[in-house]
Length: 363
Image (tube, rainbow, N blue to C red; front, side, top):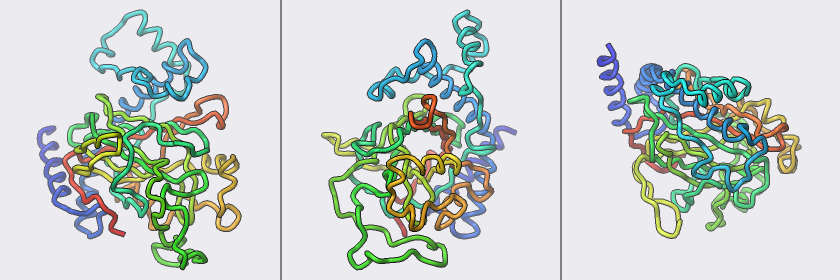
């Protein structure tokens, strides 16, 4: 039965691979993605264990004998996260030290297990949007540069839905808006559109025309980093702000094949396996809305923040997949005793590691 199931998944993955589209448009494409998502449900236990191990590793690092926060430059040093435990070894180990760790972790709320993506793990393909730069995204973990905002640590796991195993050494590329809703390189609208009002109907309801790229050298809140041997990548960033028509979000692309450029000038993109977007709980968005510098957003008193349920182009809804089984919303925890000390956000993506998509925006 397991062999037959694997054959079914492989056949579906081949069908997806044959499509040169990101977002499923036709009835056939939607049905293929729906079937693949259902087939990928068998990875759910692996995701549960994967996420729980990452949370335990973080809690042990921050809490065990070291209750204060580690400073920012060491947050993601090579030893900041312990290797994820071998499941077979963990089940049969009974050393006093490991038993003490288990007892200690039972006292921490961060050790609670959450299946990141409910019952399925296949992350749907959605639009990259107009603000992606095909060149110049630095290979780095701290993408904030000098942008002010609420400290946000991202813990991102990548799993291959063909094998249910973590994917090492795939490049996770991310980009986002700053606290007041601007993207690096795109500060202002076209001059002739300075007084443009948001669209009032259709899929683009609430959106403005994309701002052009006028500052080529800006790279803040953009960056990429490869997953480690455990299929995990971490970034230091700030909580994103909002802009007209869009819910608060972060963009991502996943490249199984990539080549670093000299002098840390970014990377040469190879095969693209996934394009997606992540979101935040509305309750958390409302708290951050009241913090500085988010309260200085220029549209705060004009249009305000778009709620997830009203996201333009149906991106928030599409990010759940055809069956609504994938959860694109981060699971967040406080870094300290209050929100202003920062957040750590977890999410796991299930990707088709053998897929190959076009690496450009189709509008």
